[in-house]
Image (cartoon, rainbow, N blue to C red; front, side, top):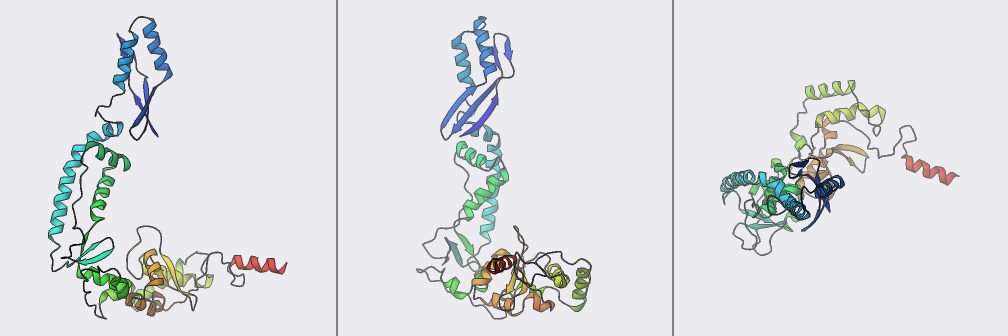
Length: 344
């Protein structure tokens, strides 16, 4: 149930009460109306004084509970935005159609739907469809209310609904998937009916190289980074004091970018990827690449492991788990407590 207070002044035979408030509790198609006590007392006074009869008051209250849209409160609130939203939708569809015209069969021979890759001619998947506008004011009002009255979010929802189905894939996009997840992982996503053939991927292809391989690593640039890092070393407690300048150099070189995909995370921070054998940090990755790195046998991540940022920068920083206390024998705090308990 959700509530809405509506100011609705009452007037009978020249007498007016400005502070009248109607309250509507709604849940689905059901609505429960009430009116504040001061208004009830005022109306009873008007009836007692002979200014109005009970039937007129009853009809007035019934009229007050009718929505201007003839439907519900959500429709009343959304109605003033409806025409503008429809006009913006028509513009969005025109833009969508223009974008679709660029997906020529030669450049985009694949189609992706429900996680499966098909050839363009396959009859199993549906085809990309433009954003659909709600068929009625009420449907629009429900979406408008769900998006908190934010028109930007309304159109994000409509666009997501359209793109959430089928979408064209280029040869480059399929190659990128192969580079990131490996051939076998991509083959597992192929349609068993149309059996699309995968494009070749040359061993020297740029997409098989982690983004950090293209970042400036000349002596002048690195010397400048080290000098800046020495002045403002990291204060992170999960880095040994003597290695904080090196870690600050690593952070500055990444510049908030993932070492593999090169993207700046839209949410969250970069995470530390470390080599389990040596216990040292290799580089900083976005959450997606960090998860994929642990599972993917692809050449992209194999190349990253061969020459990570720590190797390019020639630095060594130990990976210290949460709870580590420098100077405590290099033991995590939890392990130290456990040892103490056994000693007692």
